Structure formats: structure tokens, C-alpha cells
Length: 300
Ligand code: ATP
Ligand code: MG
Image 1 (tube, rainbow, N blue to C red):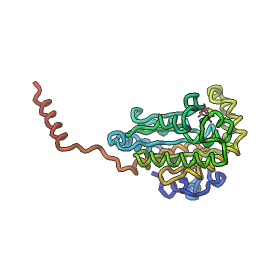
Image 2 (image 1 turned 180 degrees about the horizontal axis):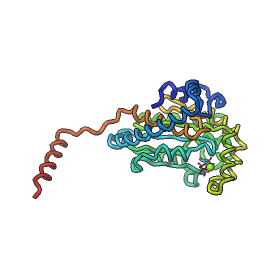
Image 3 (image 1 turned 180 degrees about the vertical axis):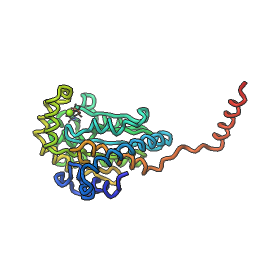
Image 4 (image 1 turned 120 degrees about the vertical axis):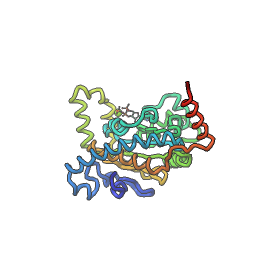
């Protein structure tokens, strides 16, 4: 596992004002990492990813058997930061029965008829499971903030576009997450932090390579034009909602191998921090097992 001092550097301390330009987008996000050199760090990242995948796979089995906690993983990022690839790699060893991924796109008319947290709360993982939100309720303070005209679709008697709009949403999100956390859902949030230069490179690759063309959408370019607005919205959202019970991690996303190793390691450590155990049988249940064994052994 990665030294916890290093991981601490990626976690946003509650109350700390986040300025994204002060956070690394590349693999050399800490002095001790940079000193080790890219080749060594890359090799180590591959080991860490493999170890964390095994660790996650076995931890998930106990999570499922223990059936007291759920894990909610929230992934947010600019386009092409690697959310899909991270999910694919990090969850590759996990039993699909104990894991579910929800990707949130533009809300439907039915979803818009409800409060802004409704569609997300319907997808929360049940106890014993890992739920991944590929985009999440944070879109409600990100894309909706960058495009406030979207608010007009969200008919609500009490919540009109006004100065305190976003402040209220942050309060609601913090309360929602606090409620979940008090009820056994451990929440881990990742912002995959991509540089504007690397996004350009990845978009060009999607245009250049026919097998990647389908990944490109002209709306990606339109959203790129709002880069600064998104940056401000992310800074505000992360600052206001990094809490003790649901911290944000700002993960460098310019090097995919680094992103995946870091996310896998943090998830493995998070599951470890829960006091998971296989259920202990009562004396009566144990006696029933002994009787079942006797029956099987005496079968003619
Ligand atoms: P990929 O491009 O990797 O397939 P994606 O998550 O970008 O994945 P898209 O279908 O390209 O998926 O985009 C989903 C779109 O839905 C994004 O532009 C996002 O901003 C938008 N969206 C998500 N939630 C909301 C919301 N609550 N209100 C309005 N738009 C939303
Ligand atoms: Mg997209």
C-alpha cells in the first residue's frame, strides 16, 4: 500500500479552500514521488494496482458477508479525464454481484419532477455492496451551475435561482452524505484532475483514431470552452463539501497508470478501515450446522 502520508496529500482537509492550480495533474504530485523518478514510480504503480485489486476483491467478499456497510464511490471530472477507464480497471477483480455502476446523464422529465437528490438516492448501494457513481449529484452544482438555464427545468416552489442557491445545495449535499454515513454507507469521492493540455491531446486522439471516434461528441468541445467556469465550480464544490464523513480526493489524471493505482489504493485502504468481519453464528445456528453435517454423513 502507498504510504498514508503520501495519500494524505491528495485528501482535501475539511474547511480548506481549494485552488486547483495548486494541485498536481501529473504523476509527480509529491516531492518524495518526484524524487523516485518516473520509471520507478510507474513500476511501483503497477505493483500497487495489482496488490490493491487483489485486496479489493477479498475485502469486497467480507463486505458482502458482513452486510452492515455499503461503499459509495463518487467519480467526478472534466471530460476525457478517465472515469470509465478507472472504473474498468479498478473494479476488474471485484465480484459483479457485489458491485454496481451508475452513470448519470442528462436527467429525464420524470427525474426533473422530483427534488434534485431523488434520482441519485434511488441508486444508492444496499448494505454489503459497492456502488459507483460515474458522475453524481455533484452535477447539480457543476453542470447546472455552469449552465444556470438548466435550473429552469427544475420546477420547484421554494428553490428559485437566487444568491443562496448553491450554498443551499452544498448544505443539502453535506446533510445527505452525513445521513448516509451515519447509516453505514462509507463515501469516498474522487475528482480526477486533468490538465487542459492533456484533455486536448485526448480529444485529438479520439478524432485521429477511428476506433475512438465514437467517444467524441461535439458537446465535449462546447463544454471545454467553459473550462474556467467548470474549474471555479469544482473548486467551490470541493471546498464546501469535503467533510470528515465524505472527503474529496484530488487525483492527478494526466497519467492514467497513476490515477488507477491511486484510486485502487485509496479504495482498498477505505474498505480496510471498516471493522468488517464474517458473521459469527449463534450457538443455536452452530448446533443446526452440526445437525446438518450429521444428516449428510449418515445419508444412505
Ligand atoms: P463518456 O463521454 O465518457 O461516455 P460522460 O459521463 O461524459 O461519459 P456523456 O453522455 O458524454 O457521458 O455526458 C453526460 C452528460 O450529462 C454530461 O454532459 C453531463 O454534464 C450531463 N449531466 C449529468 N448530470 C446532469 C444534470 N444533473 N443536469 C444536466 N446535465 C447533466
Ligand atoms: Mg462525455
